[in-house]
Amino acid sequence: MGTRWIVEGTVNDRWPINTRSNVGEVFPDVVTPLTYHYGIVAAERAWRKTYAKMGIKARGDFDSEEPVIIGLFAGYTYLNLSYLRISGVRAPGSSAEAIDTAFFSDRNPPPYEPRDGDKSLISSLRILRTVLAALNIDSPPPVVADSYQRVAAFEATRPSLDAPDAELVAFMDTFPTAFEPVYGNHMESSGLAGIVAGILADAANAAGQPGLVTHLMGAAGDVISAQYSQALYKIAGTVKSTPSVNTAFDAGVARLLDRVADDPHAEQFLSEFNGFIAEHGHRGPNDWELSGRTWENTPELALAAIDSMRRADHDLSPSARLIRDDEQRQSAISQIRPHLKGIDRRNFDKAVAAMPYWAQAREATRDRSIRFVNPVKQVFRELVRRSAERGGDPDPTHVALLTRPELSDYLEDPPALMDAIAERAALYKRYSAVEPPFFIMSQDDVPTIEEMEAGQTAPSAPALLGEVMVGQAGSSGVAIGPARVVLDPSEADQLQPGEILVAPITDPAWTPLFLPAAAVVVNVGALMSHAVIVARELGIPCVVSVEDATERIKTGTMLEVDGTAGTVTLVES
Image 1 (cartoon, rainbow, N blue to C red):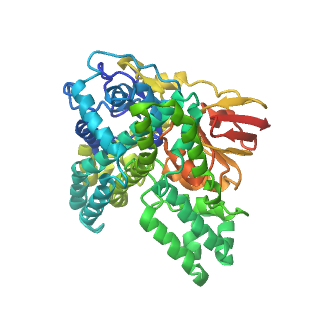
Image 2 (image 1 turned 90 degrees about the horizontal axis):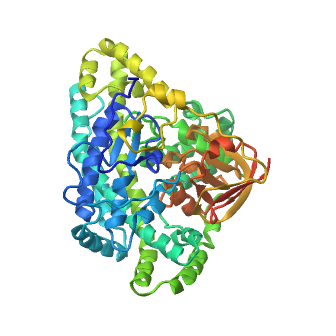
Image 3 (image 1 turned 60 degrees about the vertical axis):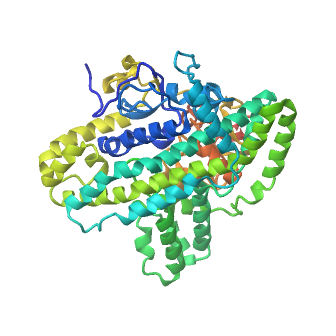
């Protein structure tokens, strides 16, 4: 039969197509059982409630409470492409293809095939009302302020980290219900951002120039996930102007904060860095994972980005690069509008005006959702620390491999579950070493670990001089520079200013690497991917969905990245 992951979902016959597209940015790694229990199950409930509120979800769409929209197969998280396309099918003026363009265009997803029950007149009327409201906004949508308020309220309920185990676990158990409306806000803003972006993509297609959509999207301004880079760049300036701190960085970022703690010249740097951690320390790679690293618990991640930025001998501020942004947007509008008539033209005009607000809202509500998780991460790490002192495992990821009932037993007697943890940690390592299927479309497609290990393909052949690798246009512009392949954001200090960042995926932990980079190339992604949104804000070209880019491109290879055409050309080997 083979060995399966600790928690495994069931492929839904009604909505069978599951994809790693888009969700790979959010959950790039193997998912632990505790994360599934506390986060994914709650997120599924929130997603369904939000889609019902927006009018997308119709009666009879689901026949059980088991997660369908967010699936867990072969150790990894998947999104249900079949169901998420329904927002385009049921939304007037949209389509399944428009949703694919916004979120799921990488790896050529299976084409949409209409089925009985996909369309719903009642849903379409309700969605129409929702979309019209979304197109008519002229300020940040209310979900943003609501998320900030809920996060602040939840943080205030976190017990002291000196509290007894039982009190800390009880706090963790309040998380799923409290988390639902905050995650619902993110799903609402993401869904509407996708629909509005779809209107712009359809308009560009109607004009016969699909690449112009990158100009239409442009920089939204005040996107929170771009603020991380700018805040760290300011700190990098302080480092450069403080000789003793700059010298400390020359010796590496490991234990750097300890090394400068008693340096009176480091006061400004430490004040700025601690302020950054207080405001943004909840972010990090794989930051939906309960046991994940954050800039707060692993500050070397942020310090490595500062290290890269401080070495730049030119201004990395995006302001100069964004000078032509509005000019390009206006040019794209003037080229597209003549091809649209009547209501399509009116909706296009409204979508152009509304898109920045929804792009901002999508990133802000995602940031607040992660912030909401942070107090639980803090409590969980304290429980792990305590149990390690009593003979338990000090690795938070290993402890997160327990189920919720097992966690209580573990806290009572850590050594009693060490054999189970060791066995699961070995299995986690095996799952982490393989690439899961990009699409799963039936229960038979869900592989065991043995099948995945046996099915791993040989590395892709290196790209050749002159080869044009085709992806999807993300952020406009052209840049030429040497490639720097980075597989983990902790390697940020390897990126030299002016190099082209080539990454497997990007979540906000990667954002600080964007600023010193001349351009960004990502293996996966789509129009509303995190990498695309942040690249636009920082004024650098970006191409996503370049399959096997991190395997086929070698560090040092000279690349030309065209973010408008969606191409990456090897101009020198």
